[in-house]
Image 1 (cartoon, rainbow, N blue to C red):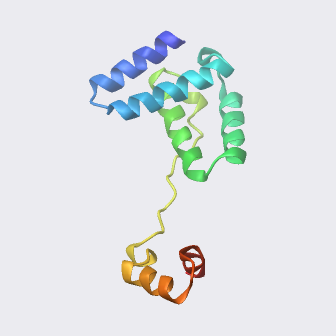
Image 2: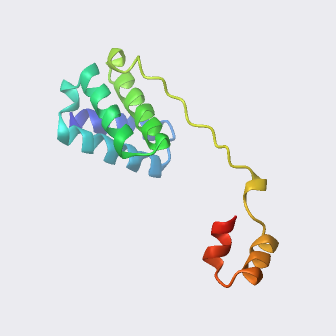
Image 3: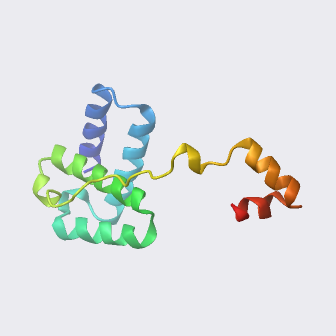
Length: 122
């Protein structure tokens, strides 16, 4: 399956995928291929992998893994084993007003002897 991984990566590259993304996909696919050959993966393996990721990683990482799995297996002609995956990136609820301004940090630093305590009090 390593050959098919290389073909997948080559197709991504031909279509203008960034080098960093290619490196991420390469590491991701080669790592999961070590656990079990991607040729032998089925829906149960996909579910098991995602459930393990849920217990180990942040939700954003899990969602990125789902996107990578879905893109690879769809490309490889095995879309049926990932068709049940809902891929939705979590909302980024952080807005500019949530980040303290320099003036806020300086004020807290003058009030509190430690910048760490000042930031915790935010």
